[in-house]
Amino acid sequence: MLISYNWLQRYFKKKLPPAEEVAEILTFAIFEVESVEKIADDFVLDVKVLPDRAHYALCHRGIARELAAALTWESDSQVKISQVKTTKLAPLVIKIENPDDCRHYIGRRVEGVKVEPSQNVRDWLKKLLASVGQRSINNIVDASNFVMFDMGQPLHSFDANKVRGAIQIRRAKKGEKMVTLDNKEIVLDPEILIIADDEGPLAIAGVKGGKRAEVINTTKNLILESANFNPILIRKTAQKLNLQTDASKRFENEISPVIAETAMNELSVLITDTAGPKTKFGELVDEYPEPTKPKVIKISPNFVTQKLGVKISEKEINAIMARLDIIKNIIPAERLDLQIPEDLVEEIGRLYGYDKIPTEKLSVNKNKTVANKNYYWESKIRQVLIELGFSEIITSSFRPKGEIEIEKPLASDKAFLRTQLSDQLAISLKLNILNAPLLALKTIKIFEIGKVFPKSGEETHLTLNDFSEAKTVLEKILGEKIAGQINDGILEINLDILIKKLPMPTERLNPSASQSLTFKSFSLYPFIVRDIAVFVPIEITAEKLWVTIEKGIGQEKNLLANYYLFDEYQKADKKSLAFRLIFQAPNRTLTDAETNKIMEKVTTAISQTGWQVR
Image (cartoon, rainbow, N blue to C red; front, top):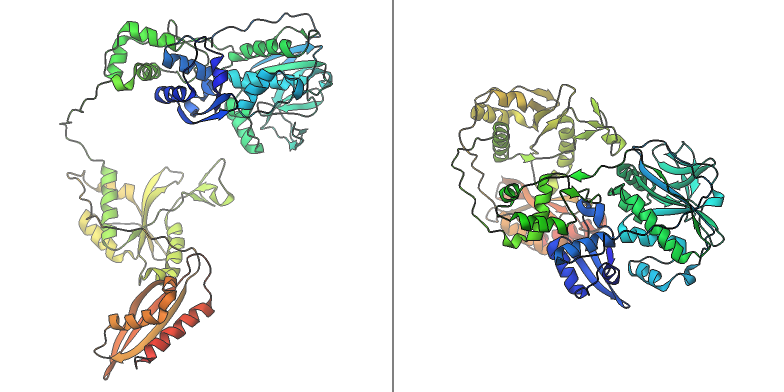
């Protein structure tokens, strides 16, 4: 969130500390400030506002309140906007189809406006908007944008002469279309909330205005909108249409329905200053199906002491609360993040200063801890299998078929929860067998422990291949016969049933001896296997032969991904040594021609020693 230093200063009678110092104060108190940049005669702070505080802090007013609380200064953030003089204009009808979609909608007619192009917009307004990356459009749009960045409430203006009938806040009908302000045609559906009139869509609620009722230079009459929409609905719409806007960002983080009226008044006052002396304002038409009630959270000094571990006097607690505009336990409407007493304790703690809270060593727990039975035996089984040479795999819980369907799957082949592990292990087994030469493995031994989801309920299963030896060892260690289902040489066991029969653990698991491992990146490109068998004198070792093979490979050694001796036998006065060489390029597909050239060099190097390539 870009915050203008000059804009913040408007909230304080005292001169603010330098911008860098303001950034440090905010960082220490609540928000990380990622950068401070000088732009013309202003400084712009890039403030990292996290979702838990986005309700109130995605605006200059919210940041000003936090800065005032940190400085223990008074700010003008609570100054009430004066009301504009109203007159009787044509009736404005507003219809909310579903209060769950639209919690609050305020409309107002304005007549006789003079829309001024960008070059005629007041300099102070253009400068402040430019400081936060907003270009000036005209005095009406600029006024709306200013209020949004000032207090966090998005607003919109329609050309009243282009609106037919009542303002309707409803779901779109399937197949309805709308052209947005940036001239993109959008096909709508019933999952999208729109602002409409009797002729059809005017705007995508909370996201983007429409072209049909756009305010242009010849506009004379307006309908102003200040509303509050369901945050989940707005987020889904913005994502679905790939239309992330400054307005949608604020609505999807949820803002208080209460501030809609304040924002409408602020916008109206700003328009009186920019739209000409003949401007007339109608009364507010306020549709508020379920008005928000003031929230009260009570805490006591003892409760604060208990939670923070430090005694803070009631007088100091009250002073901190006052800095947060919390008077007589009434929470400001904007602070949707404050829900329970512990939330207030957190606020008190950060403004009191975490550095003032003494550190203490935790007391030693003398009670005997009880091991989790399922975790213990699952870990024990895992440890035994790894010691037997198995490798653990972890596969996706989603499948193209199953008994429990996912309401909104990530993809068509991930539409169900799995009911068994063995089918995925079979796929992994095939892939590992294909890569066995690269891994220098003669046999592939893999297992998986994971959740499956039949209709009867969630279960934990174990599946493994090459299970004959493993089954014997496990039965000996566990003291229980292992029963399971076997499909194509793969065993699947219901661990919940097995572990239920096992005793409660009386000891902690002893972890296997740690190994010093080094990560080596691997290539995603295909590998090529070449075997070479050589007759050598009996006294020649495999190591000595390999030195010669390496000499033949020479500069292409970086293409050798792996190698190993896979065959050895003696015949009369000589013996045969056979090496398997695996070639693979790190960033491209290696060709047979390249590999053949390397093997020719290897054969030449071996022949020069007098040894015979078979």
